Length: 272
Image 1 (tube, helix red, strand yellow):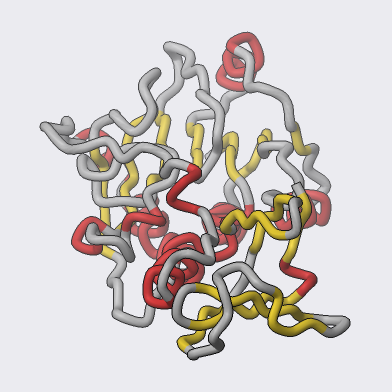
Image 2 (cartoon, rainbow, N blue to C red):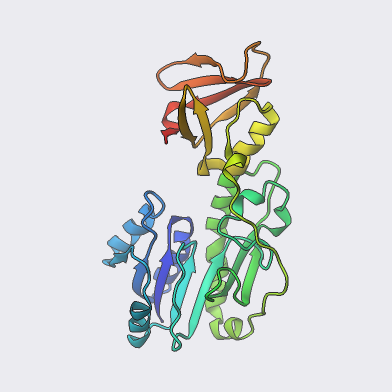
């Protein structure tokens, strides 16, 4: 089968399925945001494939179909994909159990009260994001210790099984896809939910760190703004006001919060 693949590193494991099964990948599209597609670029380069970072234009998509491409497969791709009338299969992989959790970033919700909707859904591509008929889905369990980071890894590891299942009887699953009824849309969390605010308690900070993982939190410190991609919040009576620098050496610093302190490796601080 000839296909066009649209996706970044989170689900590069799905790209591997098509390669291992011997399908002909005629086009690879990734988003050009720094750091989110390095693995995909490396994999495609090893296979001698050209990677495209521009918007998928209607005329390009039609040309692919005219060349015999029958499947457009998208996984965590961040642009709308035009689907020509002659395309046989248009499929997207979404990170929730649709119809619940439509939206660009469901992951922060799964450790914050929506764990029952954690999963992966293959659905048909439509002009509206995340609204296509549901082809097949599978749950991804959320444990007490899970973070956004660990859930991302679980989904990366579990996604190939779903793709393999779909490919075993692609016509059956695609033909019998079910329309979405009801459901919910989860907006991108507001920036205020991602503040590493020293006025918060240790428990509140731990929840934010768990919820946003390497997506990062935002910190104002010494009149500068930073993105923090890893931190630890520890309860401790330091008898200091929130936001004071308690400790620093070449690799780490610690800042007081309301009832403890926050440890931040310096390599995890990105100035904004």
